[in-house]
Amino acid sequence: MHAIIETGGKQYRVAPGDVIRVEKLAGEVGAEIELPAKAAFQDTGELLSGGTVKATILGNGRGDKVTVFKFKRKKQYKRTIGHRQSFTEVKVGEILA
Image (tube, rainbow, N blue to C red; front, side):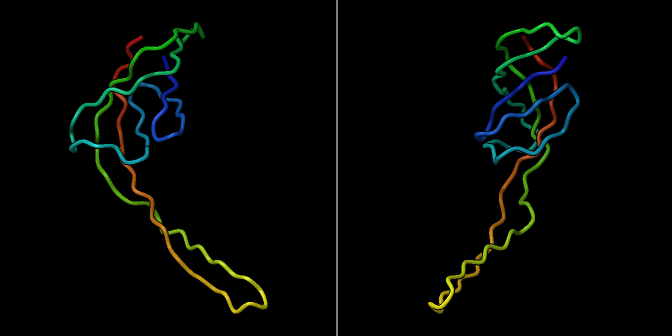
């Protein structure tokens, strides 16, 4: 069985036991959260609409640095900035359809 969940403006295909990195979620490490499922599928391919996915927060962190360089020729304009996106690592438990 697997499901499609949406969190942080992105959609993920998950199955029980999967560990995924999603946009930062509020909650303590070890806390159990429920994510709404857009769709759930049986192993036979049968579609089950809606449902919820129970998951456990494994940890929080920040991704690798991405360097952004802005440049306009002939204008002496140069800017360099960096960005590190925060994430929450989640382990998918059971899918309730």
